[in-house]
Image 1 (cartoon, rainbow, N blue to C red):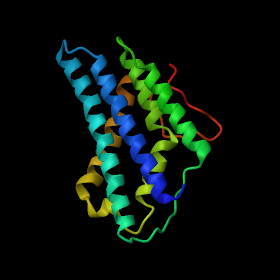
Image 2: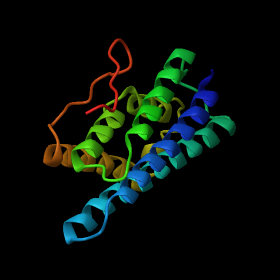
Image 3: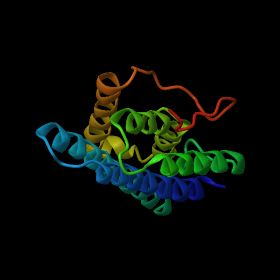
Image 4: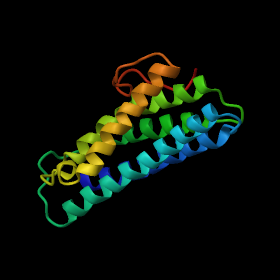
Length: 174
């Protein structure tokens, strides 16, 4: 899979992650102000993932307009399968009555996976410097990372990003 194909694949993954976060938000009931904030958090994460897909689409547009690929990126078939398995595992963990802890475990599995490194490397694949051209998206990307780390610290054990697909698979199991 060439860089353009990798971008297309990652766009689909980012949209799918957004749907996972939206589905998590839909599982919680709005009874208190804290519930409303929790639901809003997941809805915001879902919107962030749509923004990630949009950024990649912009990067693909740069690529199609002739911008040079300075750092080619491919996603090997085995890694594609691992990404898809991770997302399927996470989707299967969402259920009515999901707890905050269970939802944070899904968040950690997704956000601490190699998916994020692939997203970032695809944004850096061309000479477009897409994030520097789009300061709003660059700030939004940093805000997304901050929200995730804050939620993990508040509701789960603090973690540092780690590679989870090469040698050690992280699943969404609690």
